[in-house]
Length: 478
Image (cartoon, rainbow, N blue to C red; front, side, top):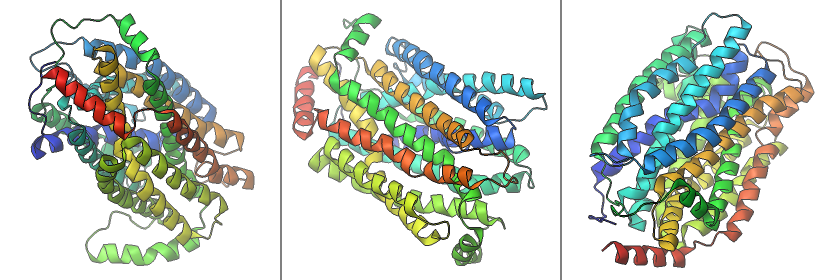
């Protein structure tokens, strides 16, 4: 391996983090609004929405990601292996992001076909951009502390994207479309596409690949895959990533149904009115006069703000106790506050917001560690096999991400269908359907998190092994 200085400038850390901000303007929109867009804006039946999200998402997870990973690992250009992919896909990803959330005036069958085509292209281009971007974190530096640091920068940026999408996006959609959500979401996605494209180009310009495989290192795709199968930490991280994103997609996609159908509007209005008055007094008027969309936005805002505080603690805790231990402990604590929602009455608005804030804080500590642990798995593979295949390891994790997103988003639509939910916020739902929306943000999403915590007892890269791998690889590269 060729090795340069492993210390990173703030400019490079910020530049790298903008790539994830751009990606999450797309990803958070998919996770938060895709099921709602298909059922309540685009007009698809819940079962058809489920079929599209599950089928296309599964094909993308198992088809697109391994192919992109294998090709990226074998890309050789003057810009490196992974940076050129960020450049090549920036503009096409922006264009398809707009088209995927457009509502052309087709008949019902035409709408289904259009949704399949645009969602497929969106997931293909997202893989082509975000997988090399994620793999880039494994070759920017081999210094574990710098890797923890860049992960913290990266996921503060993620939180900004999540904050916008989950807090402001619904009120802005309603405002931009003058009450027409179909027009509003097209306008908002157009601006997000432009901003995201610029950010990806900045990431390409400001970053550098420092860990470069030796020219004589060659391996076939078969050898790379065999290395993965024998890599126990990789197998665990694949399953853990899948479980994590099942939970995130499930509860993230269900919150809007929860607010529209379960939360008591009168109690919500009384609780948020002083907050909205204060925000209005300082010139923040994004939320309009709709208490449901305003409450939904403020609810998400509380969780995300405290997630950012949690992210700020993550690096020091990981440096001291190791990524595995910190991730597992705080994932478990955060899950307890998800379960708490099952015991809250529809009028317990203050407790809902408190539970969301505490869940956000404790989960925030884990956020940077997942991807830093995957980069550690790439180091572990090189340490064991004396070959580095960064992108294919990250591609497997992207399989987990996409599969988790697919399963979680599909479960939202499917469970609502099972509980008899009728698409359209103007419809009155049965008590059984309303109970389904409550379970979708409490018991159901808690299960994958708890399974993930138990898996970490079998993950062998602890603090001691992290230091040993880092030391041994530094010696080899020098």
